[in-house]
Length: 94
Image (cartoon, rainbow, N blue to C red; front, top):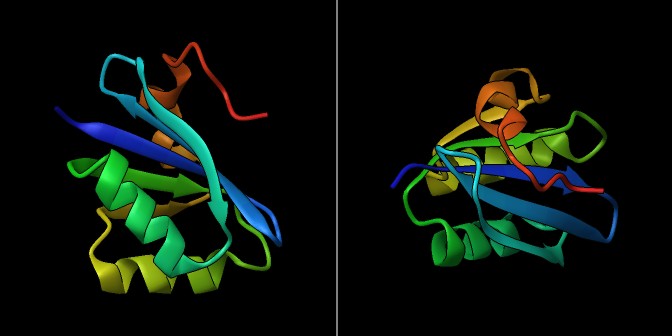
């Protein structure tokens, strides 16, 4: 099952929302704002991730490179590339 992950980043914690290709919620939660913590939760909750999308901001470059080195799927800064699968979601990060 293909899974898409969206990250809502803040300084101390990051909200993580994983959905399947049909827009159904697979997992939602919060982790520490560190690439290792985010990679760990993605591997646990969405091991077959197809794309990771995150907003742009001060931490996005660090997260992008940290997750890219860990092999966490295709990573998009900004949500443009994730709009189609995430637009079908009944659950949105707030």
